[in-house]
Amino acid sequence: MKIGKYEIEKPIIQGGMGVGISWDKLAGTVSKEGGLGVLSSIGTGYYKNKKYADKLLQGRPLDSINFCSRDAMIAMVKDAREICGDAPLAVNVLYATNDYGRVVKDACDGGADMIITGAGLPVNMPSFTTDYPDVALIPIVSSARALKLICRKWKRYNKLPDAVIVEGPLSGGHQGFGYDDCAKPENQLEVIVPPVIEEAKNWGNIPVIAAGGIWDKNDIDKFIDMGCAGVQMATRFIGTYECDAHDNLKDILINSKEEDIELLKSPVGYPARGIRTKLLDDIDNGGEPKIKCISNCIFPCNRGEEAKQVKLCVADRLADAYEGKVDTGLFFTGTNGYKIDKLISVKELMDKLINGEES
Image 1 (cartoon, rainbow, N blue to C red):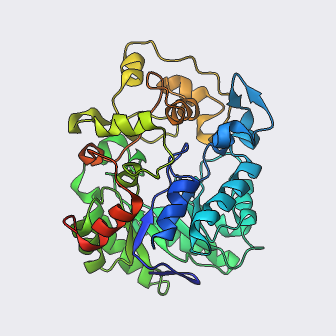
Image 2 (image 1 turned 45 degrees about the vertical axis):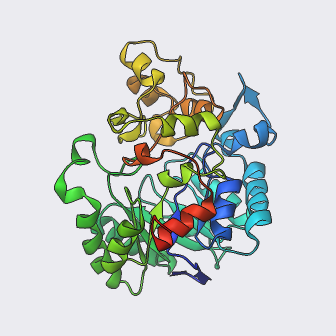
C-alpha cells in the first residue's frame, strides 16, 4: 500500500485511539510489523505520568496547551521510532481538537510521516503543513460528498489528499453519523465505500482505506476486492500485549458482552460507541462525576457547556480509563469489541489478519 512517498508492507492501518490506547508501544510495534502504526495526539499531557505537562490542576493537564502537549508528542514519536526505526509512522489529530493547527505542526516537528484527521471536515488541513512537504495528509470521511468538498477546498493549497479513510458507523468512539443514522442500511460501510472510490478517481489516484467494524482477513479481503487500497482497524489492536492501554481497560473489553456495547451521547455533538460500565449507569441515575472542564480539549464542547448537557466530560473520563479507574473511566470500543477474549502479540495479530485466523 502506497501513501504519498511511503510504502506500507501490509494493507493495515492501526486506528488512532486516545487517551493513551495507541501511543508509542502499540503504534511503534504495528509499524515494525509492516502495518501503519498511528499515535493518538489526544491527551498526550498524560504521557509518562504527566511529566511533559507544565501545569496541572487537580492532577489533570491544564488547558489544551498541556492536554495536547508538544513536548509529549515529540517524545512519543521518538519513543515509537526506537521500536519501528524508519518504518512509516502516523499521528491522528482530531479536527475538533482545540489548537488543531498547533498539534499538527507539533506532530510534524516530531517526525511523523503522516497526519490522519477526522472528527470534522479538515478543509484547511494543508495550511498547517506547508513547511513539511513530505508529510502525507489523510482525511477521514463518511461520504463521497465530504471527500469532494475536501478536495475542492484543498485546491487552494495546490494539494490533494494522499489517501482518504472512509469510516462506517460500526467503529469505536465518535461516529460520523447522527444517533438514529448509525443503523440505517444506506450508511453502512459496504454501501458508502463504492461512491467514495468513484469520487477519489475524479481527483486522480487517491487510495481509499475502509474503516469501521473490520475484524478479520475476510473483511480485509472484501474491501480490497471492492477497490480499497487497505483497511484501518482500531478495536482489535486493544487486545494486544503491546497496546498502551491500562490492563483494567483491556480486562473490561475482554469481559464485555455484545449487549454491553452501545451508542452514548457526547459533547462532540455526535454519538460515541463504548462499553456500558458503572460510569454510564451513574450518568443515567444522576450520579455522574462533577464536570469542571480543566483540560479544554475540543472546541464543540464550548468549555464544558456541552459536557454538562450530556453529563459527560470526554477528556476526564477517557483519562480515567487510561489510568485504570474502572468506576469513572469511559471505555470506547467498536461493535466487535466483545469478540476479544484474550491478549495476543501484535505480531500474532498481524499474522492472523494477513494469513487467516488459523495461521
